[in-house]
Amino acid sequence: MIRSFIKVNSDSHFPIQNLPYGIFQPKGTHAEPRVGVAIGEYVLDLSVLDEAGFFDYTPVKGQNVFHQSTLNPFMEMGQQAWKEVRSVLQHLLKEDVPTLRDDASLREKAFTLQSKIEMLLPVKISDYTDFYASKEHASNVGTMFRGKENALMPNWTHLPVGYHGRASSVVLSGTDIHRPQGQIKPPTVSAPEFSACRQLDFELEVGCFIGSGNQLGNPISVNKAEDHVFGLVLVNDWSARDIQAWEYQPLGPFLAKNFATSISPWVVPLEALEPFRVTGPKQDPEPLPYLKNNKAGSFDIQLEVYLKGQNMEAPERITASNYNYLYWSIAQQIAHHTITGCNLNPGDLLASGTISGPERESRGSMMELAWRGAEPLQFENGEERVWLHDGDELLMTGWCQGDGYRVGFGEVTGRVLPAKKLEWNEAVQEVR
Ligand code: CA
Image (cartoon, rainbow, N blue to C red; front, side, top):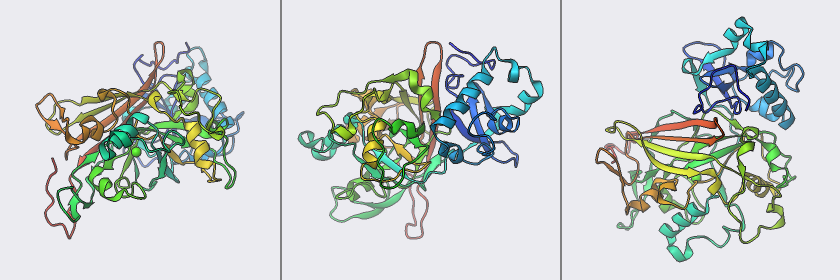
């Protein structure tokens, strides 16, 4: 097992095997944002390494891709550049390589404690697509909305269902979310009313960032699809279930999903996940040829969700799921997305859809955990939850467990703030 000269605990998410990319800025300074990788408790500043000439034998030489406020210029360079930069970084950080280890003044400039930096949104997201790739999630939701007999729509096992989401409201972990408002129509009333959402939910997802795209009119084949993937992040697809229930037919989610989607700040390279590659669930019926992949397309990523209410002393775990429950792979999603000729661009975000497993504890949304209100979640201080309350903080985390190390995603957090007071909606009450 390779090790770094930077001390990394065995439960740290950021050993030398990971090296996720992010955009950071030293706290309380006006220094320009730049690209860094996480290693243990530190961030390594790639703009410093670039200036020192460490990437001179890679395709990024002279491209100025690390003195940037987004990862996009680096992502656009494509897989060969990502591989070469990663290999330089892994070499420089090794415990037996003295170049950086023994250069005190360079180390001083290149490493900053993560507690002394501020992370920024890593990518300028051009388009956001959200899939619906967990069979357990789709079946649970289908059962609740349409009954057990019609739980899965007939197309679901033939194609990766998805919808085009909203890129403008993707926010960084730590951003507070105001409870959305809109039209709802509870089953007990005959006409819709205007209200703060009363059924606010989260969705546990993993998102994939497209690095290099494709030309309009030229689909990406399923076996080449992963070459276009720069890396993965955790995603919380906040959802307003009561708004959704009233608006979703016939064209699917609209305002129920467009108010906020949170992502984690570190983008984990696909290459770092390679040792954790696994075969996903058996696909039956067999997919059409354009969706048939000749290699295992899933990853063993453990995922957890924690909730902390205002009056709770500590966050409590409400979900333990795994990425490998997903029925449709990233490669299949990309092949399907582009089969019409649709072009993906650098910085596009493709989210997996809620990741639910077969057990109650592995369900990836509040709606499923509390079965749309029928089975409230119990917390240690005696409180219950059916939907999210104002003041609740959600935390999602995920990692791959190696032998003595973890390749992790860090976390994505977000707190629910009360609905904003609007001019036609004088009294805004706290929703619990
Ligand atoms: Ca979703």
